[in-house]
Length: 283
Length: 262
Image (cartoon, rainbow over all chains, first blue to last red; front, side, top):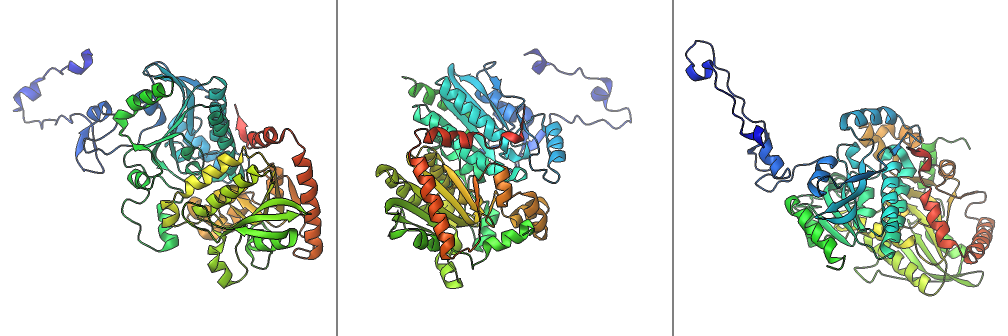
């Protein structure tokens, strides 16, 4: 594209530098420091590499960015975009919190659902949103995922889900807890219809989401470095008063203990998911 | 009556209340306990086996907290490990095979929080119970008799009927945990307990429980007789219901409907 090759014409100050006026340093391209290797990475390079640093560190990404990486261009059709939770219990501060999060994230809820193709293979897709109350599951998140599995069962489509969640949403109390059972019921019906469900666990996947649909897939993949567990690591440490083993609840830890099928770097996920869809669709 | 929700929480945690084993020995005859999950081990926090209710075979599963310090320690304070949930599922599948109804008694502050529990897949164990219980082809009744702590309680409460004792509680998180996460102050547990809507009355209003059981004469012969009669009537009705699984699905399906806007 033309604008990438566009070079700003030099002006006199830059050419000469002898006018006595301090030369404004070109700030260059914006960069991000990798929290793992501590090296700066130009944003354009980071984007081109699906928000993965050269050292392998996977930056957190929002749900729309992930959709853009995973779904074929222009193929995503969103379902239930306006479905949302209000404050069913009158929980202190919840309405204000929802207002703040909705305007900051531009999303109405912590999961985006729809249909898409991956390398031409049709599927239902849900992607959880880490920038919406850390993907916590309230009634609307549970309802959207339940409806998606029902839709997928009705249309005989596989489901691919990207999970990221702090767990059940406290502010909706018991109703949040019940979403674990509700989503599980829909997953089971979809599964009993002989249809494929693949989950990709991303950082972090914990609590009630781990203890429901995140761990109910036929094929469970995890993103490198993702923290996946039921109880939070800090809570485990405080409760047991023991030092946690190295890499506790990391994707590698789950792989070693037999709870995920593969760890798949973000850049390779789409190709693998598409191939797995084909393998379950007569090859 | 008119206790604060947090006072009810404290009462639900009290060690004078009947525990899982008390219910088993007073409601059923000839209980035979079965041990182990056939995967890793046997979890003393969950007791299960077969027994008779008015002469009819049933599978009973109970979280056991213990009454005194020694018992509580031996039962891990009623906090099950993955092998406990897997044992429960094994016994439920066995019940399904032999056409026996399942009755669960729930009393836990939550699934065990520990290194080993995470290593052995606490989340996966709970998830699998939820998944399988939604289509278990025999009637399931779950009774919350004390504390209903989050996913660790729900893992035995995907049922056709969920009953709660009047001073039992059922919550997505402990009031202390909620207060410390939201307000960085565990002392605000009183406020959290009121906000979480965790009492039996709240759970009934939210459609999470179907019936509240009076605690009149709690632990006495008459209490158990009344409960035994209720279980018998309910199981009889459920056993004759050809729509059992469809109704179980719709029961779950409407959870949270009042919170939704579109």
